Image (cartoon, rainbow, N blue to C red; front, side, top):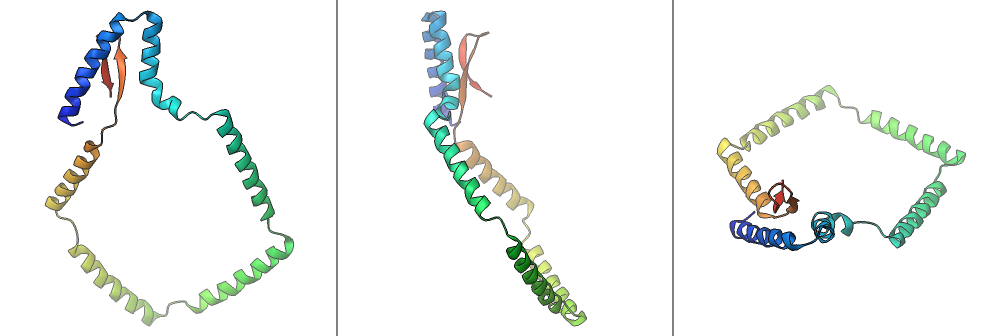
Length: 154
């Protein structure tokens, strides 16, 4: 979390804690539920959404059943597979072709090794990735009953 945002969060948590101290038990429970459970309830499916999802699932099941292979289709598929197997066998590599392929692979391996990242480059990449990952702030807050303050949930 960025420093200005962290400072703003601390100020907000102090204000929320002070507000919470003035509330009744019922109001505290509501405030705590609003803060901690807000994200979960936002993704809760409504009755309408559940009905729509069930309808789509039933339609997909019908479509899948319609694509079931018949005896005739199975026979045709087996014939095509046998033809493909014959064609694949015709492409089997000879000794000469194997030698040529090994030579090419060795040349490629040398080129790949030349592109290997050094320790310095790895460190730089890790640093960039870490900076990008930490620049996005997503945090949750929770009330700590021991200190009676709101804190960032780890």
